[in-house]
Image 1 (tube, rainbow, N blue to C red):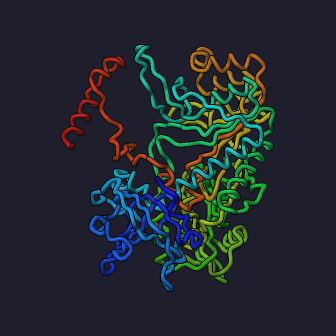
Image 2: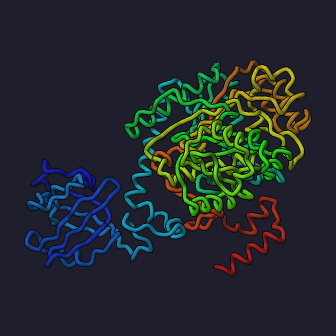
Image 3: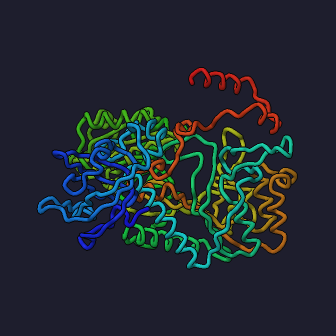
Length: 595
């Protein structure tokens, strides 16, 4: 069909007869001579219909419009002096046409298939096949492919086996709702789509595979946002006979290789390590952006010495007071803007004081005696001309608000550099967290993570203190991976399950196959999953993972292009032993009327 791709022709091919295929990207008529930019995935070649060269195809060339799919043959000629396009690999030549075949005509596209103007989200998703023709989207797909290929090459070189795990599995709780699939041949029974390959990769270690990886599809029925989709992809790994430090070192090597091979960027290792406690104290989050400082300071005990009733009441009710100092002067309008930002994110308000040569100034400074002001300034290491911003609330809410304020300040101060990639390990997570809603202890990550050695003997007696041998990997304020050393001792696993609401009978019903497997000499092992979509998105300078997924869903978990999720026929419902309830029928009727 073609002799060259549309990025290949150079001066060396001048005089050659060539055949090209692609889409009409632009068309220009210059006094009877028609110039067309012919585009394929690889690039653009300028082709020329000149009646003095060949007049046979001028009439049909005059009918060509954007996105027509064509095949041409012609002679490669040099562009006229001063007309070369140095931005294109093919900018030194053009092809004069002596044969043309229209493969398919195109109607007027509902969106622009170029990068000069981007359509709205709904149109981009509805006509995704056209959106993906855009050079920028083609580049993102190619980049994602490069990352995946590089990951495979690296892991293959480290003796990993790529092994596929099932997509139709038993429903097991992993933190989000399962997508379920009814069984036609087993009435009343359901498969689940895997939220991750967690249990199966553990079983592969019991099976003696030693090192496993998979570019795994994971499906979770949860509320969506820019960095979350119903289906996402992980670079999923598991390793036997490895310590947590050895696993993290392997991941650092993988990340380093991905950036070097895909972007020619050197990533420094080892990555910064932060305990969960330190991360929450300094940054208010377990996925900190450490490209900039702006650390938080716990000041509860100091400000409680003041006469400011709000702070004293918060401390007396078990809350905390933390401060952030942007280390710059802010006007009153700017301060009010940040107060409004905090309130929109759940704060009752934001107290503030200005640092001067003579102490602190604001409408609340009068409540702070001179000695308290001095102690506060020293604690924060604040200099004259800066502003101290305070949030007082329950610890979780205080941290959450200040973490968001910290990023907002960094954004406004120009401290966020998308080309600077800074990784951090967050470790020593609590293994359990108390759910006020369920009135019981639940896993912080998942119930297959090993308690740290010092807690193994009596973790049931002190669940609030227990730390797990588990960790997260954060990049520029986004969690891109999570891992742990797994529980390979079936008795410890039973004890953990019992603590989080799975007594023996229930544990055997849901996880008996895993507990049974560990009876037969399972190795100690651990691993992690890296969020491929999030990683690739950040590498390409965005946090919206839909930009690096070929066919994503919208915020309602719908695909405007193919209309999924859709209605199935009554016959299928009967075959699957299903019956719609009143709410489902009403929803279908509503959708039918809208169509």
